[in-house]
Image (cartoon, rainbow, N blue to C red; front, side):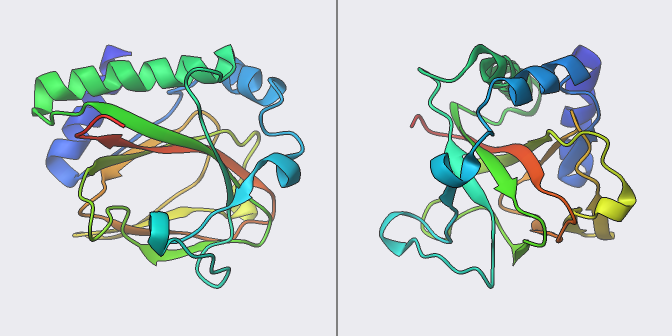
Length: 199
Protein backbone atom coordinates (compact mmCIF):
# COMPACT_ATOMS: atom_id res chain seq x y z
CA UNK A 1 0.00 0.00 0.00
CA UNK A 2 2.92 2.39 0.59
CA UNK A 3 3.60 2.50 -3.17
CA UNK A 4 -0.03 3.51 -3.73
CA UNK A 5 0.16 6.13 -0.99
CA UNK A 6 3.33 7.52 -2.61
CA UNK A 7 1.55 7.78 -5.97
CA UNK A 8 -1.39 9.57 -4.36
CA UNK A 9 0.83 12.02 -2.48
CA UNK A 10 2.94 12.73 -5.56
CA UNK A 11 -0.13 13.24 -7.76
CA UNK A 12 -1.77 15.61 -5.29
CA UNK A 13 1.44 17.62 -4.88
CA UNK A 14 2.17 17.87 -8.59
CA UNK A 15 -1.24 17.98 -10.28
CA UNK A 16 -3.89 18.32 -7.57
CA UNK A 17 -5.22 14.82 -8.27
CA UNK A 18 -4.20 11.16 -8.29
CA UNK A 19 -5.58 7.94 -9.79
CA UNK A 20 -4.63 4.57 -8.29
CA UNK A 21 -5.89 1.20 -9.47
CA UNK A 22 -6.56 -1.74 -7.12
CA UNK A 23 -6.86 0.41 -4.00
CA UNK A 24 -9.49 -2.18 -3.18
CA UNK A 25 -8.79 -5.69 -4.44
CA UNK A 26 -11.33 -7.58 -6.53
CA UNK A 27 -12.11 -9.69 -3.46
CA UNK A 28 -12.63 -6.61 -1.27
CA UNK A 29 -15.01 -5.15 -3.87
CA UNK A 30 -16.88 -8.47 -3.97
CA UNK A 31 -17.12 -8.47 -0.18
CA UNK A 32 -18.72 -5.01 -0.20
CA UNK A 33 -21.17 -5.91 -2.95
CA UNK A 34 -22.04 -9.21 -1.25
CA UNK A 35 -22.63 -7.51 2.12
CA UNK A 36 -25.99 -6.31 0.85
CA UNK A 37 -25.42 -2.59 1.41
CA UNK A 38 -26.21 -1.76 -2.22
CA UNK A 39 -29.21 -4.09 -2.52
CA UNK A 40 -32.71 -2.62 -2.68
CA UNK A 41 -31.19 0.85 -2.94
CA UNK A 42 -34.50 2.41 -3.95
CA UNK A 43 -35.73 1.83 -0.41
CA UNK A 44 -32.61 2.57 1.64
CA UNK A 45 -30.83 5.25 -0.43
CA UNK A 46 -31.97 8.86 -0.69
CA UNK A 47 -31.84 11.08 -3.74
CA UNK A 48 -28.80 13.31 -3.44
CA UNK A 49 -29.23 17.06 -3.25
CA UNK A 50 -27.22 20.19 -3.96
CA UNK A 51 -25.94 22.39 -1.15
CA UNK A 52 -25.77 21.78 2.58
CA UNK A 53 -28.26 21.65 5.45
CA UNK A 54 -30.90 24.39 5.09
CA UNK A 55 -29.68 25.17 1.56
CA UNK A 56 -30.07 21.56 0.40
CA UNK A 57 -32.30 21.10 -2.62
CA UNK A 58 -33.05 18.33 -5.10
CA UNK A 59 -32.47 19.11 -8.77
CA UNK A 60 -32.50 16.17 -11.17
CA UNK A 61 -31.35 18.47 -13.98
CA UNK A 62 -28.04 18.85 -12.12
CA UNK A 63 -27.50 15.48 -10.42
CA UNK A 64 -29.34 12.16 -10.39
CA UNK A 65 -27.51 9.95 -7.91
CA UNK A 66 -28.78 8.23 -4.78
CA UNK A 67 -26.70 8.11 -1.60
CA UNK A 68 -26.55 6.54 1.84
CA UNK A 69 -24.12 7.93 4.40
CA UNK A 70 -21.83 5.42 6.09
CA UNK A 71 -22.14 5.17 9.87
CA UNK A 72 -18.76 3.94 11.06
CA UNK A 73 -20.39 2.46 14.18
CA UNK A 74 -22.70 0.15 12.25
CA UNK A 75 -21.16 -0.31 8.78
CA UNK A 76 -20.45 -3.89 7.66
CA UNK A 77 -16.90 -5.16 8.11
CA UNK A 78 -16.44 -5.21 4.34
CA UNK A 79 -17.11 -1.45 4.16
CA UNK A 80 -14.93 -0.75 7.18
CA UNK A 81 -11.95 -2.28 5.34
CA UNK A 82 -12.20 0.69 2.97
CA UNK A 83 -12.83 3.22 5.76
CA UNK A 84 -9.73 1.98 7.60
CA UNK A 85 -7.62 2.24 4.45
CA UNK A 86 -8.75 5.85 4.05
CA UNK A 87 -7.78 6.58 7.66
CA UNK A 88 -4.30 5.17 7.00
CA UNK A 89 -4.05 7.19 3.79
CA UNK A 90 -5.02 10.36 5.69
CA UNK A 91 -2.25 9.75 8.23
CA UNK A 92 0.24 9.25 5.41
CA UNK A 93 -0.82 12.44 3.63
CA UNK A 94 -0.65 14.41 6.87
CA UNK A 95 2.92 13.25 7.39
CA UNK A 96 4.02 13.91 3.82
CA UNK A 97 1.90 16.85 2.63
CA UNK A 98 1.09 18.52 5.99
CA UNK A 99 -2.63 18.63 5.25
CA UNK A 100 -3.94 18.49 8.85
CA UNK A 101 -6.69 16.02 7.92
CA UNK A 102 -8.71 15.08 11.00
CA UNK A 103 -11.76 13.12 9.80
CA UNK A 104 -13.72 11.98 6.78
CA UNK A 105 -17.30 11.62 5.62
CA UNK A 106 -18.24 8.87 3.19
CA UNK A 107 -21.39 7.75 1.46
CA UNK A 108 -22.35 4.89 -0.80
CA UNK A 109 -23.41 6.21 -4.19
CA UNK A 110 -25.53 4.83 -7.01
CA UNK A 111 -26.00 6.57 -10.32
CA UNK A 112 -28.86 4.76 -12.08
CA UNK A 113 -28.32 4.26 -15.80
CA UNK A 114 -28.68 7.54 -17.68
CA UNK A 115 -28.11 9.84 -14.69
CA UNK A 116 -25.27 12.31 -14.28
CA UNK A 117 -23.87 15.13 -12.17
CA UNK A 118 -23.12 18.38 -13.97
CA UNK A 119 -19.85 20.30 -13.60
CA UNK A 120 -19.27 21.48 -10.03
CA UNK A 121 -16.79 21.97 -7.19
CA UNK A 122 -16.97 19.85 -4.02
CA UNK A 123 -16.07 22.52 -1.49
CA UNK A 124 -19.03 24.55 -0.24
CA UNK A 125 -18.91 28.34 -0.52
CA UNK A 126 -19.75 28.79 3.19
CA UNK A 127 -17.80 25.75 4.45
CA UNK A 128 -14.20 25.12 3.40
CA UNK A 129 -13.50 22.05 5.55
CA UNK A 130 -13.51 19.56 2.65
CA UNK A 131 -9.86 19.32 1.63
CA UNK A 132 -9.71 16.18 -0.50
CA UNK A 133 -12.40 14.40 -2.50
CA UNK A 134 -11.95 10.62 -2.55
CA UNK A 135 -13.89 8.16 -4.72
CA UNK A 136 -13.47 4.40 -4.96
CA UNK A 137 -15.40 2.56 -7.67
CA UNK A 138 -17.15 -0.79 -7.30
CA UNK A 139 -18.13 -1.55 -10.90
CA UNK A 140 -17.38 -5.04 -12.16
CA UNK A 141 -16.34 -5.60 -15.80
CA UNK A 142 -16.80 -1.94 -16.74
CA UNK A 143 -15.92 -0.89 -20.32
CA UNK A 144 -15.61 2.33 -22.32
CA UNK A 145 -19.01 1.58 -23.87
CA UNK A 146 -20.61 1.68 -20.41
CA UNK A 147 -19.69 5.37 -20.06
CA UNK A 148 -20.02 6.97 -16.61
CA UNK A 149 -16.63 8.66 -16.71
CA UNK A 150 -15.54 11.14 -14.07
CA UNK A 151 -14.49 14.20 -16.07
CA UNK A 152 -12.07 16.49 -14.25
CA UNK A 153 -11.15 19.95 -15.50
CA UNK A 154 -7.43 20.31 -14.84
CA UNK A 155 -5.02 23.12 -15.75
CA UNK A 156 -3.73 21.00 -18.63
CA UNK A 157 -7.20 20.18 -19.96
CA UNK A 158 -10.07 17.75 -19.25
CA UNK A 159 -9.26 14.26 -17.95
CA UNK A 160 -11.83 11.46 -18.23
CA UNK A 161 -11.59 8.51 -15.82
CA UNK A 162 -13.49 5.26 -16.17
CA UNK A 163 -15.13 4.02 -12.92
CA UNK A 164 -13.31 0.67 -12.81
CA UNK A 165 -13.66 -1.60 -9.79
CA UNK A 166 -11.09 -0.91 -7.08
CA UNK A 167 -9.91 2.34 -8.69
CA UNK A 168 -9.38 5.27 -6.32
CA UNK A 169 -9.49 8.89 -7.47
CA UNK A 170 -8.35 11.59 -5.06
CA UNK A 171 -8.29 15.33 -5.78
CA UNK A 172 -8.30 18.76 -4.17
CA UNK A 173 -11.89 19.64 -3.27
CA UNK A 174 -11.21 23.37 -3.58
CA UNK A 175 -9.41 23.32 -6.92
CA UNK A 176 -10.82 20.84 -9.42
CA UNK A 177 -14.20 21.21 -11.04
CA UNK A 178 -15.56 17.90 -12.28
CA UNK A 179 -18.67 16.13 -13.54
CA UNK A 180 -20.06 12.61 -13.83
CA UNK A 181 -21.07 11.57 -17.34
CA UNK A 182 -24.12 9.35 -17.97
CA UNK A 183 -23.65 5.57 -18.02
CA UNK A 184 -25.59 2.75 -19.61
CA UNK A 185 -25.50 0.74 -16.36
CA UNK A 186 -25.95 1.50 -12.69
CA UNK A 187 -22.68 3.05 -11.47
CA UNK A 188 -21.56 2.29 -7.90
CA UNK A 189 -18.95 3.97 -5.72
CA UNK A 190 -17.86 4.91 -2.24
CA UNK A 191 -17.61 8.68 -2.32
CA UNK A 192 -16.25 10.91 0.40
CA UNK A 193 -14.16 13.78 1.62
CA UNK A 194 -11.19 14.21 3.93
CA UNK A 195 -11.83 17.08 6.34
CA UNK A 196 -9.67 19.41 8.41
CA UNK A 197 -12.17 19.22 11.28
CA UNK A 198 -13.83 16.47 13.31
CA UNK A 199 -17.44 15.64 12.45
